[in-house]
Amino acid sequence: MWFQTRRMRACFRIPALIAFCLASVGCKEEGTIKVNSITFEGVTAVDESRLREALATQQSAMLPWVRKRYFDRARFDQDLQRIQAFYTDRGYPDARVTSFDVKLNNKQDAVDVVLTILEGEPVSIAAINFLGFDVIPADHFADLQGKIPLQVSRPRDRQLVVQAHEMALNELRDHGYPYANVATAETGADSKRATITFTAEPGTLAHFGETVITGNTTVGENVIRRELGFKPGDLYRRSVLQNTQRRLYGMTLFQFVNVETLEPDLQEAIVRTKVTVAEGKHQRENLGVGYGTEEKVRVDGEYTHVNFLGAARSAGVHARWSSLDRGVRLQFNQPYFFQPHFSLGVDAQQWYTFTPAYNSTVTGGRATVLHRDGPATSWSVSIASEKTSSSIAEDVLNDPELRDDLIALGLDPTTGKQEGTLSALGVDFQRSTADNLLNPTRGFQLGVHAEQAGVLLPGTFNYYSIAADTRHYQPIGEDFVLATRLQLGNIAATGADATNVPFSKKYFLGGAATLRGWGRYEVGPLSEGLPIGGNSFLAFSIEGRAHLKGKLGGVLFLDAGNVWEDSGGFALNDLRYAVGPGLRYQTPVGPIRLDVGYQLTPIDELLVNGAPQSHRFRIHFSIGQAF
Picture 1 (cartoon, rainbow, N blue to C red):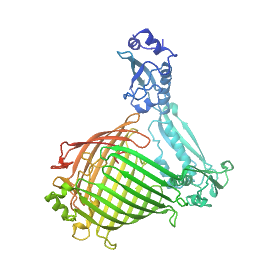
Picture 2: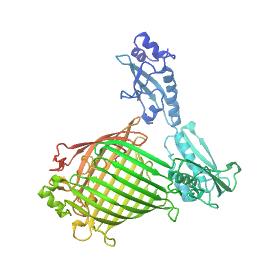
Picture 3: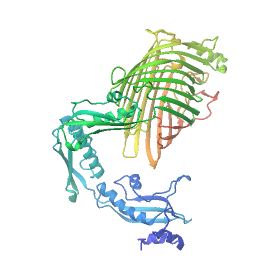
Picture 4: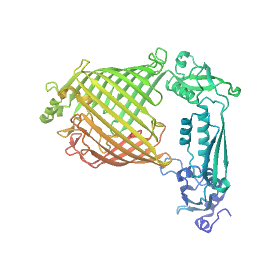
C-alpha cells in the first residue's frame, strides 16, 4: 500500500474517484488535486527554500493567473529520493524522510504536504590541503586559500568542493598555465571527518602569440584589436581573455563574441588565440511607456547608431516626457580618444524640470573625457556650457512672502524668472564591485562629483559643489541582503551673493529613491509651505532585502536625511526619518518595486499640490531597486 501511515490513511477517506486519481500513475499530467502547500519538519541544516526548489512537486502560487501545480504520485515518489540526494550533496549522507502527510482539504480539490526529515550527523571537513601550487606567487596563493568557499569544521558540501576546484584551476590558468589540471580527492568521509586535497599539475608555462580575428564585416579589424587586453609575448592569463571578451561585448557592436585559444591539445609554450564576432544591428530604436507613482505616465524614445561614421563611434537622440521632467538630448561618443582607455563624449540638451515652486529649463552641452582603469573603476573630466532659465509658477509669483524669498535667491521680480549662463568644470570618480547593476546582492558602489562654475570661466553663475553617493551590499545567508546607502552634497556660492547659484542646481529630497515617506521634491527648505531647494543635503538608507518565494521578495527600510538652506548647513539633530515595508517581483529588466513609506518626523506646514499635507505615508511604485 503506497500510503504508509495510519495518519495518512485517515487523511484520505475521500470518494473513490479522487482517491484513484491520487494513487494512479495514469493520472493526467495537469492533475485534478492542486498542491496547496509543502512544509518541512526537522529541517535545520539546509535552506528550506533551496530544498523546496529541488523538488518536482511544487506548491501552487496564490495569484489566480499564475500556473497551478497538481499532485502526482510518481513525481512525489521521486522527490523522496531527491531529498536524500540533496542532503548527501550537502554533507548529510544519513538524511532520510521518516514520514509524510498528504492532507486533503474539505473541498477535496487541494492537498497540503508535510514532510518530516531526520538529517543525521554531517560529514565535516577536517582539513583542506593544496599540493603542487608553489608555481603561484605566495600572496596570490594566500588569497586563493582565503576566498575558497570551503571551511574547516563545516559540513562538506559537494557544490562548494566543485567551486573550490574551479577557483584553484583558474588561479593556475591566470598565472601562465593554460593547460593545468587539478585533481580533487576526499578521504575520511566514512568517519564523518573528511580531508579534501587539491593536487595541481601545472603543465607548460605559456605566453600569448598571434591573434586571428574572424566574423567582422563592417567593423574594422583595428577597432577589435585595440580592445585586446594582451599582445604577443605577454604571460598567458585567463582573466585577460575574459576581460577582452567583456570589453568587446561592451562596445555594443556585436551580438556574439568569443575569445578562445587555438589548438590547446598541442600544449605549446606560445598560445595563439582566436576572436570570433558576429555583428549586431548598428541602428537601434527603442520606445518605452511606463508608469510610476511620481512621474505618472512616462514616455521614452531613443535612436542610437553604434557605428556612426565607423571606428565604433556612437551617436543618438533621446526624448522623454513625464510630469516631472521632459526634453531632448543628443549624444556622441568617440571610444578611442588618443589612448585605448580614454573616450570622448559630447552631449547637448533642452531639458525641463518641474519642482513645487518653480520650473527650470537647461539648454546647452557638455564635453567629457572619460578614462576607464578597468570594468570597476573610471574617472572623467568635463566642461559644460549651458543657459539656465527658471520660471516661478503664477500662484507662487503672486504670493508676496514667497516671492520675496525667491527674489533673495535670484528671481527677477519683473519677469518672474532667473536666467543666466553657466560655464563649469567637473570631475567625476566611479568605482563599483557590485555583482549586478539591476539587483546587486554583494559589493559596493562609490561615486563622487565635484564642479566649479565661473571664476576662470565666463558666466552668470559662480559656485563650487561636491557630492558623493556610496552604496554597500552584504549578503547574509542565501536569502537575505543588507543594503546601505549614504549620500551627501554641498554647493556654495563664490562670494557672498546667493544669486550665484542657479535654481536648477538646488538640492531636494523625497521620493522613491531617497526619503520614501515623502514624494519627490517634498523635502527641502520651505517658503510658505513649498520646498524651494537648498545648498546642502545628507541622506542615509538601510534596507533588508529577503527572498520570500519564487520571484517574490520583501524589504524593510529606514530612510533618514534632510536638505538645508545654507551651504555647509548639515545638522545630524535635524533629520527627517521614514520607515516602511516593500515588495519586489523579479523580472528580466529588474525588480518591480512597491514601497510604503511612513513619516516618523513629519514636516510641519508642508504643502502638497497646493494643499496642507493630509497623510504621513507615501506609496511608491516603480521598476528597479531603490538603490
